Image 1 (spheres, rainbow, N blue to C red):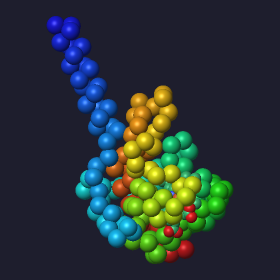
Image 2: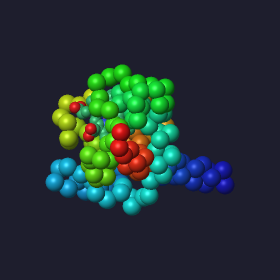
Image 3: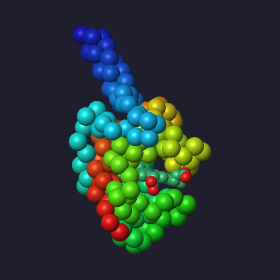
Image 4: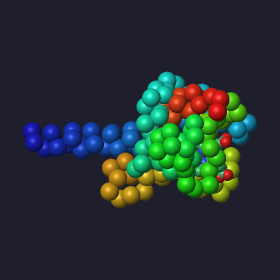
Length: 152
Ligand code: HEC
């Protein structure tokens, strides 16, 4: 009985690990964009805003600063990265998605992390070791928020 329970637990843990470290398939069109939402998911812009300013794992604002001008969220940016103010006026949704998923395809040698590629998480203490930095849902949340960055 105890052994069967143990076996079920091990199996469940394995299934969770595979699910967490997986990436859903996607199609890059013309080497320039991923037009379809990852996994067909709808993004939540408010969740995307919170992710953008997350200081631990995501850290977009550490490089890009606060869209809308310095000080909006108490950070004027630091490293050399473009200001994303008015981004939706100059980039398509599909291009934004590819920037987050695999920026090195658009800017070879870039310092921006590939947020949706296997191997993004390489800390031994990370229970999602070997998986991507963001989930498909988190990528879509960020895209939804960035698509609202008009004007400026
Ligand atoms: C370590 C610094 C760094 C981090 C962190 C970072 N980026 Fe970038 N990002 C860059 C740089 C630098 C570029 C410009 C490309 C290049 O020349 O390397 C860029 C380019 C972009 C572009 C294209 C900008 C344009 O004008 O078209 C988008 C969109 C973008 N980043 C979004 C994000 C988002 C969203 C996050 C967080 C999920 C993020 N970046 C995190 C450094 C960073």
